[in-house]
Structure formats: C-alpha cells, structure tokens
Length: 208
Ligand SMILES: Nc1nc2c(ncn2[C@@H]2O[C@H](COP(=O)(O)OP(=O)(O)OP(=O)(O)O)[C@@H](O)[C@H]2O)c(=O)[nH]1
Ligand SMILES: [Mg+2]
Image (cartoon, rainbow, N blue to C red; front, side):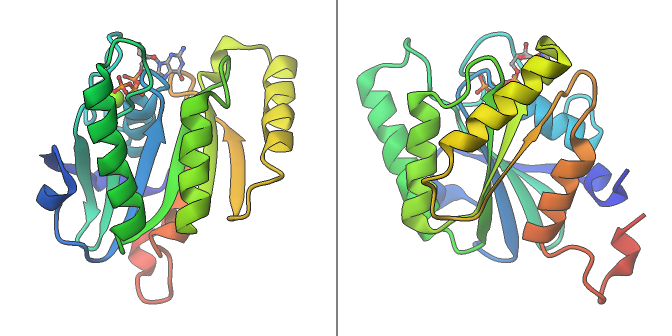
C-alpha cells in the first residue's frame, strides 16, 4: 500500500472552475459516466470508506470535488453527467465547465477515465477521449466493477477496449479495477505517482 494516498482529505467542492483551488502543483481528475464508480475508486485508492460520496442514484457528484493528497497534489472527482434524466441546459453547462477545465487547468496532469466494464466506450467516454486528445492530456482508463465479470470475460473486455484506443494520439494506458475486491489499486497508484510527480529523489518518505 502506498501510504501517501491514505493521507488524502476533502478540500472543497466547486460548482464551476472559477471556484477551484489555486491552479498550482499537480492534479489528476477522475472522469466517468455517472455511476461508473468514480467515487468508489477514489475511496479504494485512498483506503477511506467515505471520503468521496458514493450512491446508487446516478448523478450524486454534481460538482468538481477536490481532494488534497498533500500540499502540492490533488485528486478531483468530476461530475459524470452521462445519464438521460439531466436536462439539456444542465448538460450544456457541464460541457462548458469540462471544456474549460480540460483546456485551461495547468496543474491538470492527466485524466483517469473510469468505465463500467460491462458498458465501456459509451458516447460519454468517447467525448472525454476526444477532449484529452484535443488538450494533449495523458489518459488512463480503469475498467471498473471488474468483479461483475469472470476473469476471462474481464480480460476480453480489456483487450477489446485497448483495441478501440489505437486511434488516440495522447499516451493512454488501461487496467482492470474493482473497488469491492480492491484489485487494481497498486496499478492506479503507479499512474498517480507518475502524474503527481511522487517518488522523486527529493521525497522518499512518501513511498512505503
Ligand atoms: N460490484 C461493484 N460495484 C461497484 C464498484 N464500484 C462502485 N460500485 C457501485 O456502483 C455504484 C456507483 O458507484 P459510485 O462510486 O457512486 O459512482 P460514481 O461514478 O461516483 O457516480 P456519480 O457520482 O453518480 O457520477 C454504487 O452502488 C457502488 O457501490 C465495484 O468495483 N464493484
Ligand atoms: Mg460520484
């Protein structure tokens, strides 16, 4: 277990990027369709039961929720408006907010895109991937709820999704993840460490 992430605390919730914390240090954002398992993944990665609020009701996380890993590093839980009940006007506002965030946020080092392994590469996901491409943001995909499929089917989903990512120009990696079975956490930490510039010679105390 990477102890750094267990120190993560809630910082603030921002309904728009103007209210985000100062654009300094390093930040990684968790994106994904509503109910994909973003909040559950953040809790699993930080080994905290209820740091990010999870819900059976889609659309629970409606703001950009910032978590502080340490003084110069943050994780962000992005709202996942990928479900039908959201009014068109709200969708539009969300799109504008996301576009501004992806393109202007200098501390944003990469996007963790979470997809339910049973429904990968939805229109929402493809939109996110296009934005990453356009903004030259590295992309890491976690296929969540891998526990819902058998090993063989999970592996097939991983390979299929990887095949669909051939056209993507930005660096892209992909993994299986399960918050309930706590699998894929080490792999997620490795990507976060890289993007959040953890483990340089200057700060060996962060590594276990
Ligand atoms: N079986 C299983 N269920 C999971 C897993 N991760 C999340 N879930 C369930 O999926 C539902 C949605 O999880 P959340 O983490 O709240 O999803 P979210 O992406 O944050 O959703 P929004 O905040 O609405 O955008 C909850 O009922 C979770 O318990 C997993 O790895 N395995
Ligand atoms: Mg959530």
